[in-house]
Length: 119
Length: 91
Image (cartoon, rainbow over all chains, first blue to last red; front, side, top):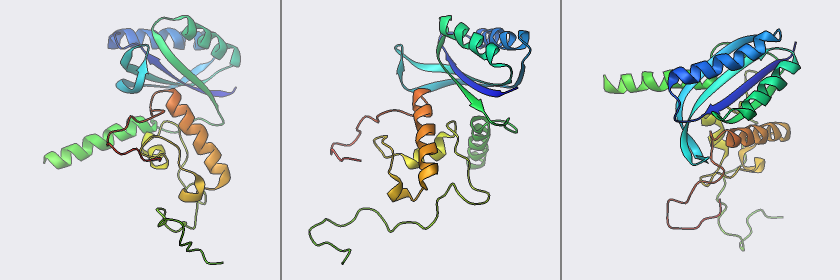
């Protein structure tokens, strides 16, 4: 089954719990149609590079899936209908990535640097 | 056939680097999520830098362009950086 990677931006007003619920709802669509969600990452509330729908921040979530295309189409449709998802991008991958994505690694990097500087 | 044209101003760009930073064994992968790497190939204004300056190969430049456009769509990178300094320089 093909591999897909989806990144979506949820509204700033949502709490972390609501973002998690949203992620789970979308993941459920995938698993219901026989797919697997191989990676879920919450990049947290990030500042956007420009304003989207008048908001400057959004919750970024990354989903990596191994699923039939029908499930992805359905998930995209749901994201389009949902008021909470501001923007989403789904890409097809040739192979699954190993380990956490660049975003997560970088935050650790910065944290380590800050610790070193503080010490 | 002299390169140094007296009419042109001093070339602001260095001599071309030999190899593409994304090709060859163990090279970096172009990923639209990797904003730090991508921002090295984008000017201060946010415009993409042409490959004749960065020495990226044609194929990788196309991939890079695709990744930058995706990052811009996801608001990880801006389309335009609002000018901070007073001077209106092109790149």
